[in-house]
Length: 275
Image (cartoon, rainbow, N blue to C red; front, side, top):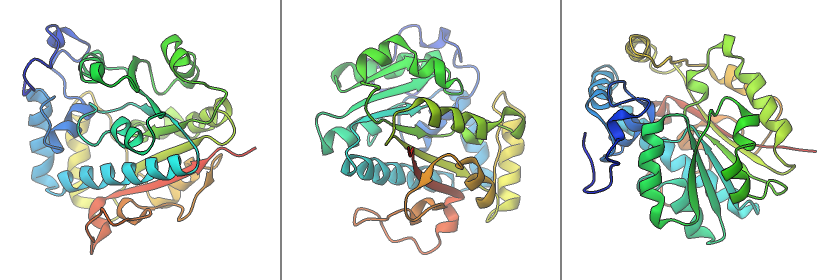
């Protein structure tokens, strides 16, 4: 495993993934140039890049979008964030962005992969504004009922839910719309949903090849077009500019101009839980 010195738990390779199965969270870390990934993560990531060389660009574009969305949330008065199915929180992660904007912000990372949870626990030792919990992001009641999370956050106040790759791994049979509907029911008024979703609309052949790679692993992968993604957000009031490609969601001066946002192969939206 590639690692930062003294920052990997001794029992990391005995966790749920055991270092034997690739993890989307650790693949994200690899694409970002991080050191918290195993050989299977790197192997699948490199295979995927053979079909879609833009994958590192996609991940960086997504990370920039999350920074802008978290900034917008803080500007709207939200100080609590729940990062669902998070990748390893390395440089530029949610807690770093939020805390730089307001030291009172608190962040809970949620993951059901025990290896990722172990890594996160070590990384966050020096970040009292953030914790990680082991829970299933596809079970809103168990996430928001998790004891440590409830002690760390005030669930009477708005929270911002961040969906990294959850929707990309839920088929229609998994009822992703029902999942987002339930989250809208259980979070306080004024809460936000920060979501992204991959699409094949602009790179269909390359995308299909990447999906085929995922199908050969234990990781299901699903893409949707803009209308399909929008339909999943029916219970949330979309903030301007609505559903757009990730580089087009409120770009700011920190972002390099992108001539063809279609390279991102990913849609973004921020929704608000209304009355």
